[in-house]
Structure formats: structure tokens, C-alpha cells
Amino acid sequence: LVERCVGAPARLGDLLEHAADAGGGLDLADLVRRVPEGVEIPGLRDKLAGLLRARRHDVAIWQATRDVAKGDAFRAQERYLLLRNRGILCEPPHEFDDEGNIIVRPKERYY
Image (cartoon, rainbow, N blue to C red; front, top):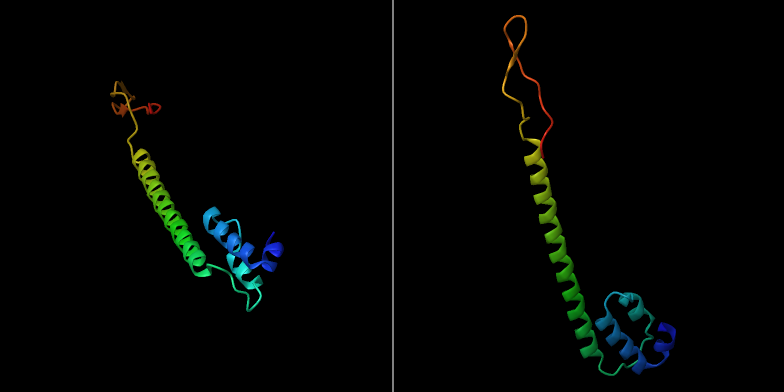
């Protein structure tokens, strides 16, 4: 598809516009490198501006999801530490050994 579009400037402009709308399906740097020197593409400035806006938008979304994932990981770690630092549930002492010391037996956790 890219090889066909390189030969026709109007199609190349449409391909750039589609790349801006569709997202990361095409390697734009490779596409720009394939364009022969001296080829005039109608409306290139507007298409490249739209492409850059779309890329900035994609990067902003990626950064926002990265920040949310960091926050989720932090909250999960806090929860893990909270559960880890809990005490062990023991029944009240009711048994004594031969010397009169209290025997405490740990029970299973209830959570």
C-alpha cells in the first residue's frame, strides 16, 4: 500500500491523513523517508499538523494511563503492607503449663 501511495502524491497525502486518524498502524518516519525529494503533496502542512496533534493526543493518553497504573500499584502495595502487619488472632489464655506459665496458641487468620 505504501509503495502504491509513494508514486501518487494525492494518495500519499490521503495516507498521511489516514495515519493521523487511525493511530499507530504506520511507521511515519519510514513513510516520510520513502517520499522522493521534490514531490509536492497537496495540503501537506495541514495533514502533518493533524498528524502531530493526533500523536500528542496519543502520548497524553499513554502518560495518563501510566500515571493511573502507578497509582494502582502504589495502592496495592499499601494494602499488602497493611494486611502483612496485622496481628495474629489468639484466644484468651486458658491453659497453663506445669510451672504456671500461660500457654497461648495462635489461631488461623479470619480474613
